[in-house]
Every structure is written in C-alpha cells, then in structure tokens.
Image (tube, rainbow, N blue to C red; front, side, top):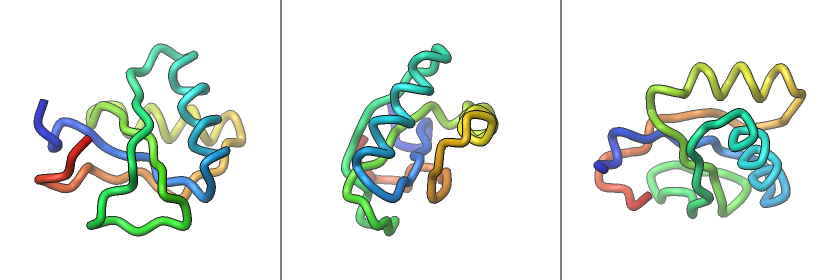
Length: 81
C-alpha cells in the first residue's frame, strides 16, 4: 500500500507508542510501530502507523482512554511505513 493510505500517531516516548499500539489493536485497528518519518518531528523515535481513514477514530479512542500522544498526521508521501 502507498504511504498516502496511512497516518501516524506521534508520541512522547517509546513506552507511549507501545501503549497506543496495544490500545488501538485491542479496538480492532490495524497498527504497526515504525520509525518517525524524517519529514515529521517527535521527541520519540517511534510512532504508530494506522490506516489513514481511521485518524478520527484513533484520536477519539486515545482521548477517551487518557492516552497521551503528540498528534496524528497523514504519512508523508514517499515515507516508508
């Protein structure tokens, strides 16, 4: 799949990335831990890739569960993910 079909959840630390991935997986969302794309910045070197069409759902789930995250962004074109 092309990168434009994905988005990434940026987090503050690797432990947050693992928590985000677990929470979203438990909700049935396809996820993958990947390095933060160069085009995006983050305090952490890892982020969670999700389907682009699930951005709003992921944001709602994370907020409802009090899971801290930096932001959710479309995966930049040409990024590996």
